[in-house]
Amino acid sequence: MRQRADRPAAEPEIIPPRRDGTGSADGKPRIWISVRTDRAGSWSSVASPGPFAAILVLLVVGMLAAVTLLIVLGTVLLWIPVLGLLFALLFLLTNFRGSFKQFRR
Image (cartoon, rainbow, N blue to C red):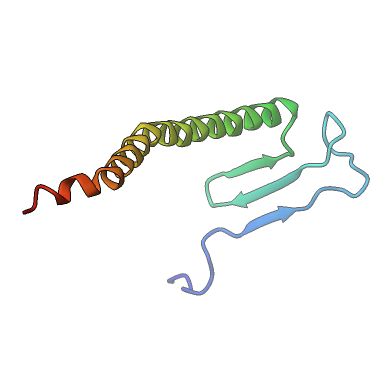
């Protein structure tokens, strides 16, 4: 006989944590997921991140912010001399505009 197509081969069983917080060694609630197949089962445990994970995430975010700030500041500092030369050139051209008119004739 063939198995029906609408029925999955393995059905996951999700057991929510207990309300009283018991059921783990450290007293924190856990979520346990079980998938039964014909051969064997597998399980996975999901827990809230600890202080080490939070510190690691904050360090990575801080490093990304520092790199972004360095790139932005580098770009701004690169354009300062370019804009200074442009303004100096415009200043010189506007002051010597009358001097160039006498060479036209």
